[in-house]
Structure formats: C-alpha cells, structure tokens
Length: 87
Image (cartoon, rainbow, N blue to C red; front, side, top):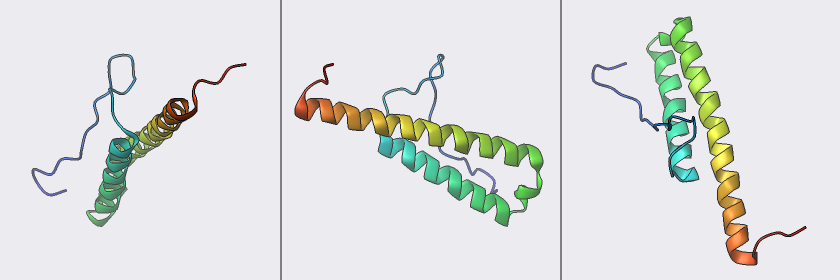
C-alpha cells in the first residue's frame, strides 16, 4: 500500500454493536474493503496470510453488519408506513 494510505473505518461500540450508521454508510465501508483487497493483490500483499486473513475477517464481519443494518432499516420503514405488526 502507498505510504500514508489508510482504509476507511467504522468504529464498533464496546458491546460489539455499530453506532447509529446507515446501511449506505456500511455498504460504502464494505466497498472500501473490497477495493483494499483488490489493491492488496496488485501490491502482492495477498501473499501475506495474516494480512489476508485479517482483511477477509473484516469483510465477513462488515457484510453481516450491512445485512443487519439494512434489514433493520427496512423493518423501521415498514413500521413507520404501516404501523407495528401485532400477533
């Protein structure tokens, strides 16, 4: 990686949850991680198993976070439009 290059960051709270971020913010962060993976391959960092494993773990974790945030946003919107589900 070029010197001074730094990947984007989404800070997790102490209990492992995300602060109030939108699905779009998490998606953009995930896209940045995918870009980092592609750049790492070009820079031959893909040969470093520790770096690769760490990056893959972060991509997996961020993917799960994105799904969770997106589903929560959809459920919240559904509730705002049609009211709470009962039963």
